[in-house]
Image 1 (cartoon, rainbow, N blue to C red):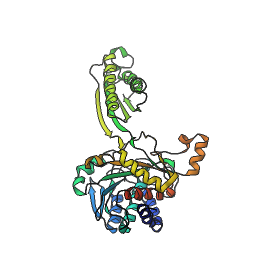
Image 2 (image 1 turned 120 degrees about the vertical axis):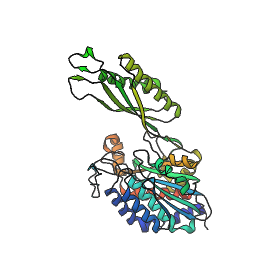
Image 3 (image 1 turned 120 degrees about the horizontal axis):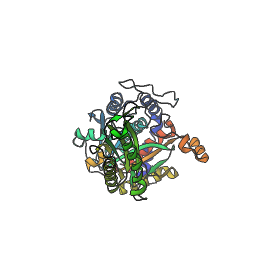
Image 4 (image 1 turned 60 degrees about the horizontal axis):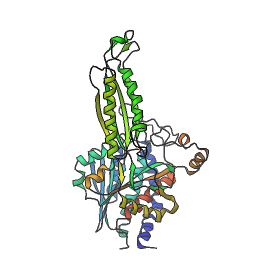
Length: 420
């Protein structure tokens, strides 16, 4: 057994002693979710724990972000990110520690994406590394990010001088719970998560009485044709081997059934994996919106607003191969390959700001028996709740142990774990 493997195992022996506390921490976070930029309670608890373990703690970075830095002699610097925010969803898991929290407008809030698990796993890794400083060298940076869901939390931390507050990392790491069997650790070099772009298109007509449509220009018909035509972008314009998802998620026009309104608005979301495809789809949206308006003899051209985006998550090849090898050595057949994901993330903004390579992987979080039974029935999509579903919640074990172990194994692949 190599010195590196021995050191990893020795660091992780401490997990038995802290497991019960980590499970309690997870239940507490799950029961007290907070929306993006409102993570006051969560960040305070994170900071208190980091400080107790000897970390140099930076609070209120980008609003509610927290960064803990543990310098432990010569060696590389590793940054590990966990996102903290929850979603405006009413939880329907039936768990004894289910959220009953509400936001400032009394709307329901729940950790329906698993960020509470991410926070707990990083806290576990941070504690184990602090307790075993004789087994590694370098600097560990534990970054707890706000507001991943709205997509501006990473940028907020960067704008608040993140890169000037902490050492430049040699590598950045992150993980996310996903609806795969609990205990699995899944990596993917290259494109892993899609870019996401939101567009708002307002088409203009001319209002008229519903009994006299010839006196107006109907933006409802215009918007309806636009929705249909946009579906051909993926099926008829983008190359079949270039994955793209285009979803029209909102359409609004008028206020009563007997009036042709002046305008109609649609909102759509686009997922792509490459810059060329991203530009191609944007160009198509603009062209089609203008053409439909012209075809309807609209009194003015459409308004097209690009109002929100996430970057693609493209894992560094060398970094991913190194971490995947470490996972294979530790997890054996529980390590595998992550499917290409159509979800999106803002994590990559952080390594981009530092000019550092990164890798981002998935952690299975579904009860294995339930998953395998659904797979046999062919009902995974209907029987296994996915992230952002009101019934989504990771099984605590072995998800928590696996997430802590994966974080430690990946970090120690860089932190000089030869015995000191």
